[in-house]
Amino acid sequence: MKTISVILPINNPEMLSQSDLDAYQTLEHQLLLNTVNTTLREIKTAEEGAQVTSLVLEAIQQAEKSGTSAIVVYAFGDLAVKEGKALVSIPVMALGKAAIHTASFLCRDKFTVIPSMLAHNHFIQAMINEENLNQKFVPASYAVEESPANLKNNPIAFSKLIEAASREIVENKVDTFSLGCGGFIGMAKPLQNELRKVHNKPIVVVDPIEVSLNISNTLC
Image (cartoon, rainbow, N blue to C red; front, top):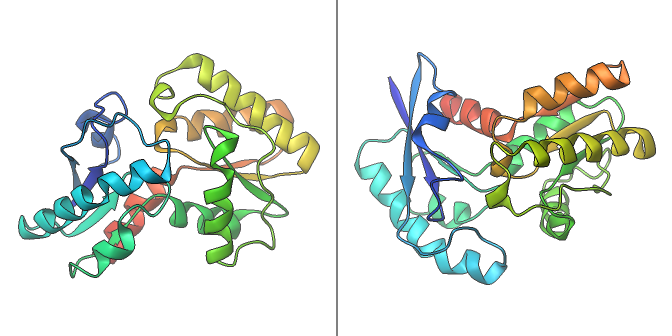
């Protein structure tokens, strides 16, 4: 069985736990949660991202030494991924790029990424530009507007997520979504089911966690 190391770049067990990852395990791979030694409970700015990059790089190197087959950094942006790939010989990826490529491939007309906050649209757009996926992409006009640390298992956040996605469907003709934050863990399938029921058409919601883990398993 292969081991995939999932590196959480903050010190916040409420964001992600080993039991959360256990739900994504398969007969082919096991998932092992690693955290870094930081006081940050969430990353709000580029400066905070820079603060934890060196810690994530240390965790990436240590994971390879321990026999890990692949690494997923638990961040939608490519935090420490480029630098990490230069340090180890095993696959290293974050959540975002796999998700946006999958959403672009699956969408019939338009796709978007729903962020926790619209303030995150700038780095999502930069990722879309880097991957040349602008043809079908429309920036999100609506978001949950909750801190990433307050999303998981939050029924109010889920209700806001349904409302945001529904408005994108009606106003922007979006048919495919990627969730834009790891804090949305566990919400992709319920959101897809709810949107298909409400709008009576085949809406797709990509789970960035599931997609990234599946690709990592394929690569290693």
